[in-house]
Length: 454
Image (cartoon, rainbow, N blue to C red; front, side, top):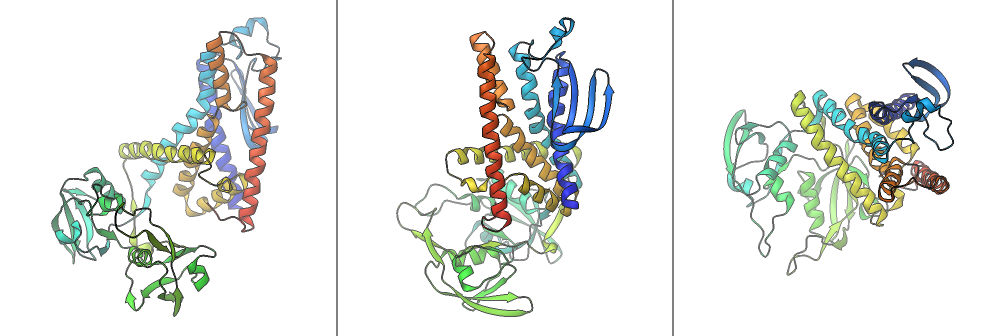
């Protein structure tokens, strides 16, 4: 029941945001809006305000804004012709078309801001491992320290520590740490490139060798990889390898990485018992291999990290102004990631199996709603960005297709041929239906376990 309600609420909010963009700009440009509908089919609720009928319809799978004279065959009274949609110059029609996607791209700023104000669970900056001879080790940072300040600025989350280091990659940073109830200030020098290289890896920039407390807890196990073959299961905790204690996920990853094709004896904590298994990491090309020297391959076993214990988290809340700034930056960050993913899909760099459809959206809406309002709002913001970016694609029947038509009319200085427009829209509709069927097929394959969840 929660999944169904969350899915309906998600679709309704996204449609309202999108259509409100079209409505506001159309009214602002003097175009008559006859109907604003959330959903399709028979009206469940309808009310006329001014010259517009507002309705909630029975089928909550979209919505629309009906403008006067928005189709070539629409009958328009001569006295109202100047307020009809197709009578407007291309720039006005383009403004109305882009307003829907723009609303979907801008709304996440407010949605993310609301999440940041409510509070986001974030990892505390507790140090679980210090790499020998690293900047952090030379500064005197120790396992068990909690970072509380960077150059005198209070910090409460690991993300803020990493971001501060990233903003000051070549500067010494005075780090305040809490150790046995006392605050100690230590100066951490900037990282230096390894021998034979001129660049510092990003991981060294954002940690300087002091790694987060992150237990070696297995969250996912990839089928047919060495871990699965050995019998490792989600929920297992790796406590030792070859009788050497494993204190953190990063230590586990480092051991696996350094031992391709080498048998390793894992001691696992599973429930209340200990289990031993032998794992032989698979050798894969080393993406960080230097041009001369260094290992050409690294080890992989096919496991992903599990969720850290609750005591490692804190609730990170922002004030209104900081939340809006954070909402803007998170919107840009997520939007760039989504656009990049779409580009990789078209370039065949990402499998088409990763495409998700309505079933996946419904499932994820229910999962996020079960985690609480902030998680659901975050999910809605991400889907809104997806909707806004996809609607700008130059496909007939989408808003991007309308923008393309307006651009052609502006260049040629004459209206587009109605017959060509009709054919293009039919092709666009066929393409969208094909994509929807394919995405739904992927959803079914994920649901029955043939495809992994993205």
